[in-house]
Amino acid sequence: MIKINLLPYREKEKKENLARQVTIIAGLFVLFLLCLAWGYFYMFSQVKDLEEKLADSQKTLKVLEAKVGDLEKFKKEKADLQLKLGVIGTLEENRLLPVKTLDDLSMLVPQQNIWLTKITQVNDSLKLEGVGRDNIVAADFMKTIEKFDPIQSVDLVSSKKLVIADLTFQQFIFSCKMKKGF
Image (cartoon, rainbow, N blue to C red; front, side):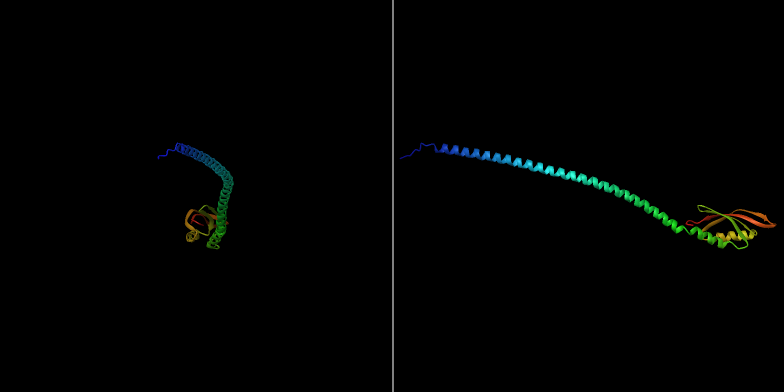
């Protein structure tokens, strides 16, 4: 005998299957919405943290820029002081050089024969004015000065006779070019 089941069990399974699928889809949709909400709040908190870090960084940058400005000012002041110390050092080194040069020059003047009346120095030019017993003594003094280490060259500017108390002397003016560094 053939049995025929007249109960609609297949339709019931279809309805149950459809209800299960709708429930799964609705659950997945709710889960998707929850994930979106979580992602939104996570990104919102990340943006807020980054904005706070940016504000802190900008404050730190302003403080550092002020320090760098001070540092640049101090570097400039240091360079100025180094320059001044260099000038002071050079002046200190060369302080006694003119005194020594004039002392050495005075040792070259023959006693009782030459009398220097005026010495003028302008930059690297030295002008000697004086009186000698005669032309030969003045010429010998000029040759002696030419051999003096700080002097590069000597030129006779003028030489003329001078009478003082019935004595005849030779008045002279020498122009000397000094070597660099003296």
